[in-house]
Length: 250
Image (tube, rainbow, N blue to C red; front, side, top):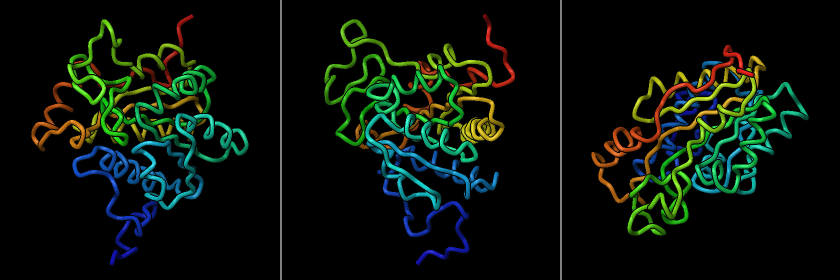
């Protein structure tokens, strides 16, 4: 039995351990986010929105107001809640399918309008919950259930660079970054700065997280970590792409 007094305030002690596959990066990201919620003491004013896909397994992870949305619609739902009550802090949590495929138009328009919400996209290079099909973020040459010979950029397109895209269109005041579960200090720093940007009311906050999916990658622990730390980082560069103190060039 879990001792509630030993758990961070923002965590729902009844749902531990998490429901993600062993080695999945969702659990790492959510642990860091929970620490930030507690440190900033924002539990009572936070609304956490989760998309369909692996991210939906976080629907009862935190002891905060949570809503599960239709696939790809987490951003506009959070925008609606934020506009209805600007005092709330709204975080949209989704995978690369919800963020860059069916929900790409919502991500782009939320960024373009500089909506004062925060969005987190977990990038694990495949559609994890439905069996490991090719996703917008699948790397060139990467084999998936729907690209058994590897992704061919000439016929299947190139992986989506989400933060680069958002940074190019977001107005002044936005915060845009890409972090990795392979660098916990960086991950926490970027997520915390994104939350703080929303608290300050500056504009849209967006963080992509390079994550792991050993179940569908069919990798052991060492192979999984090497893929995140070495292969993914070659294509998806981590760092901050926009900060609120930067002025948008005309």
